[in-house]
View 1: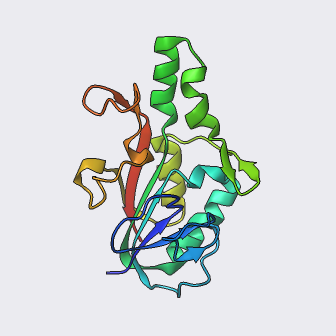
View 2: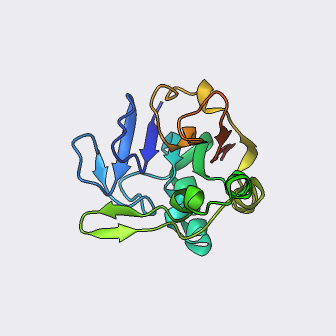
Length: 179
């Protein structure tokens, strides 16, 4: 099974091909995740991307997802995670503290010598409509606890309060679908 981890950053999941713009030893392809010329059409069984799609605006995201779909085999699974706007609003309403949600909303990250920021926000309706528009099927939320990477703490496991995975509110939207 050919599995790809797009926007993996510091996380190195065993058995995955890692793609990221960072210069780290475990990266197989140093590249942005919007163009994947190193993969042939219909060659990938599984794509995982946690908290990287939101760095593209809504129009760019269409092209990014089209590219991912191009490299996926028929029936291949895509799991994509993004900050979930709906629970972030709940956090804001319950705390009245905008600083509690600024990080997940804007996502400032230093790459090389420049900062990149989130360009859009998602909830399940927006993301599922986007995936459906592109022909992805069986779109649903998934539980990070029942994945082969559950033991690797990444943003798919983002909770408020931070790290309260038992009682906190999941602020990551974790969606899976098939080509």
